[in-house]
Length: 272
Length: 307
Image 1 (cartoon, chains in turn blue, yellow):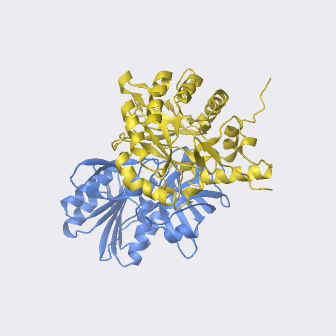
Image 2 (cartoon, chains in turn brown, blue):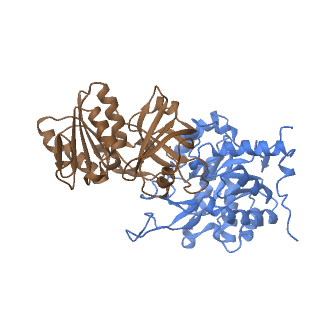
Image 3 (cartoon, chains in turn green, orange):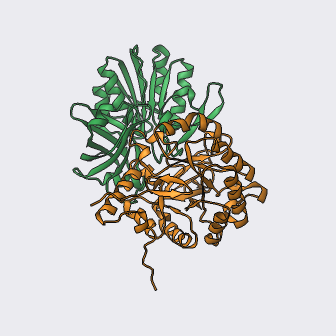
């Protein structure tokens, strides 16, 4: 088990970068140093007594080891994230992390597909940066429901840290300024790409999307790692609240903790 | 300022200070080793233990509610054998004062657990969770009935080598009668309160949020209820009372000590902040030192009563 810390960290900025989507940067040298793509932190605005009571699990979006800073990307979906969005630069954030098992990167990895749906972009942005700098040939599929949901900072990031960016939208044609864009689900173009060019897949997004990725991986016989999202109370294996159905070696269903066994799982280990 | 002596005695078990963890909120201790040394606490109460391993309930198992949370974990735990083999040694090696919370569906199961733990010198204290359906009595909580509480406590006390603490449920008409029944049966201490059965509804899905429909409410939402019950029980019994219920800060812990709790258990707070228990312990030490309170006797139960 890797080291983790619990502390209070100064917020550098917390700005809206898309519709109800915020990027929060904070000073946390240890977390920037220790964090791996796919790992997460439990965060809570400091000083709020009981609303929200529990910290929220958020994937690490950026880690700048030199500056000693980390960033999160989150959508306001409930009270916890709404309170988080009100945190101002200079205020402090209670953070525990880095937590969980991130993406496993094979030393021999030469090329990969990243499939990101909705807020699943956060951990994959961190992964893209690491893989691209490590000369892995990357094609990123970034899916949204409509053009308005595109987070420019994220699409720019993927353009910078990939060889090809493929945008998909369930609605909206013509679809933005991107060289490659499709109307449809984010899992549709990868099926074509996989036919001629099978590569390992890394994915994060809504569960039906991940299920489809798992099917594609099986069909094309490529490894896939998926990052799951659940509600958590503690984030480090104690509350047993975040369990999901997994398959053991015999194929039997068991409940496993997303926080410590995941949040990244080999797609074939999840009971879809 | 002198260093206060915060130790207490529960039926011959010596606890170095009055801060314990609440069962189910501290795992088997090891999960917190990255954050602080669990041996610093008065005791670590480990996850509720059953004879056989339990897989627990399907998800969703937890949901946040106003100033609290509901959980319906379903007693997921490794079972007696694996606990003794894989979990307990780590705690003993670290010098942790270990309390084991036990639960069963029959009196025989409770007794068998107590007997199995009696062989373990590393277990300092047994906590009996009586918020469990009594199969022989049609699923009624053991802890909802004075006679059943007396019976199960007596059976555990007889089988156990260690002192026994009974953890009371708030879901009763008269908690004092239940508390006295446990003490008569030989309980060395009482801990209270367990969670309050509650539910949450998703109006979009028109369904209960939890797969189990009902879950236990914990957190600051239950603190005033717990405080009142601890006050009532502490006045009525002559064994140490351990206060549990939504303690987040040192101030909350001091409230429980004032109404008569000789120790406290930190539960949901450890999810909010993994350092909560140790911060509360340090806070009590600082408060006692700053107010020249030499020991627990000089503070516990010192509530000024009205009239």
